[in-house]
Image (cartoon, rainbow, N blue to C red; front, side, top):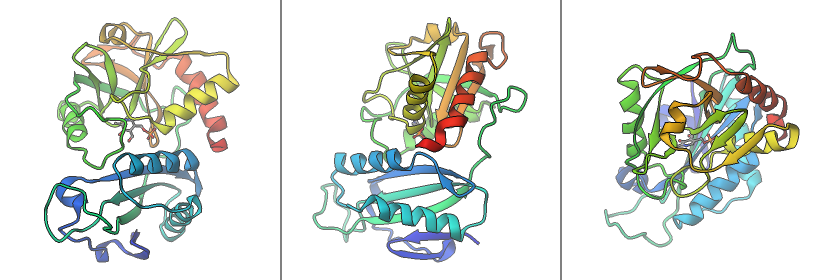
Length: 285
Ligand SMILES: Cc1ncc(COP(=O)(O)O)c(C=O)c1O
């Protein structure tokens, strides 16, 4: 039985009830986070909570809590739910109003909902055991505030479905200048001549926590060179390697894009080096 958290209470998932007038339901008016945990240990907790607070501030939801209170919720959910590897989903919406009106209501108590769900075991830095990804591409038709981790995910859902319905694991997105932005639910990278290259942080992409940790780990613990710059789709199709990152995927090697192999169509050596370093150091965050 799944135990969830709703507005201060822990209860079975089927007993958790949210008003149909909740602005999260009516407008997708909220912020969320997904924090991975392996063997009960949360990965990247502090940067995840920092991004959550920044998101709340960006959209003007008043829900200030100490970091320790968020940690308590996450740890309670890990304790109350079975599973070695659990993602913790935290969702804060602007709350339930009495009417449907676009303007932000004042002093509405935010709705805080959280649950735990099973995630795949942590990636193993071994080419023969890694899950490979085949992806499609499509134009990024989302809004211009993709740096906000909004619960309004219809654009991402439709982009993910574009690839999924064609038998792909993900969809890489490009803007109207033919520049890669990110995946529908992950950040994206190419590797060319030993260099890891990923688009810079701006309003077109989510500032992924896995991205932050990976770039920090590579700069602290390796001599692998990273460039944060515009990546054209021509470069994507001619890359030696392509990777995706997210909290549940860690570093995912892409071996096929729109039916064509990436590089030699096999997992690359830089992926192995990066995932080895990530596995060794992710617990520091
Ligand atoms: C659109 C998008 N970009 C990037 C990411 C990766 O973020 P993180 O590494 O924090 O999981 C996600 C994760 O859900 C996402 O939905």
